[in-house]
Length: 226
Image (cartoon, rainbow, N blue to C red; front, side):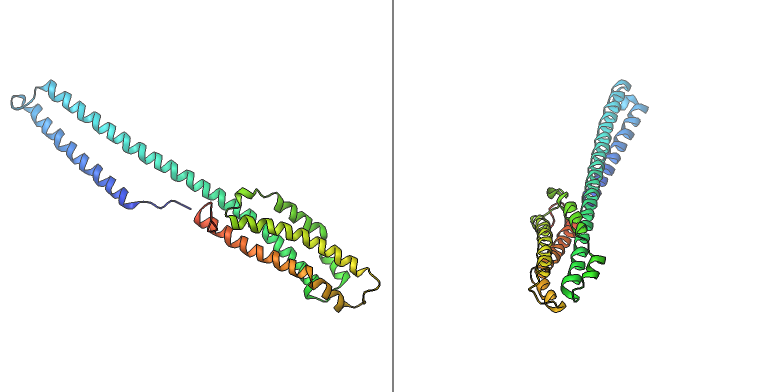
């Protein structure tokens, strides 16, 4: 986020600089008049010393103003670079979390919404995809996520994805049990239990992360969750 410019301060600085320049102009004009007629004022050597002194003061003031503006520009540039870096990191985290959300949405369609179809599952869902997303989430530096709520949501997402794989394995084990009724409806009800609740938790965490990371890009490194 670009720092807001203090226009009142800038206007005051310009006015002050203008007044000082006008004052120096009058002083130099007066000294020039004295130099034209030394009998009415200083001797030429004294007037020259005054001109040199005033010129030195003007040079010091100009150097101060230039240095102050350069320092302010350097500060604003550094802040802008930090904001761009933070926005880039937030976008990367959101991209990974979006992939996690899409993955659990696929799992929900296979296990919870559609009548369960083993062939469709083999064609559309791969356990390794979820494992890759978990590793990507685990590689995110937690201290760069932003607010405490975002950190909590990220860690919760990782835990829920791991539990989701455990629930899918348990579901597969129950399907292989010959004592269970062999019907798509019953298998779907099995999936609607732990798998469905875990999917809802992941989607809820993703919405919270999206909200917090968007706030971080706008409000600064701590976001709105502090």
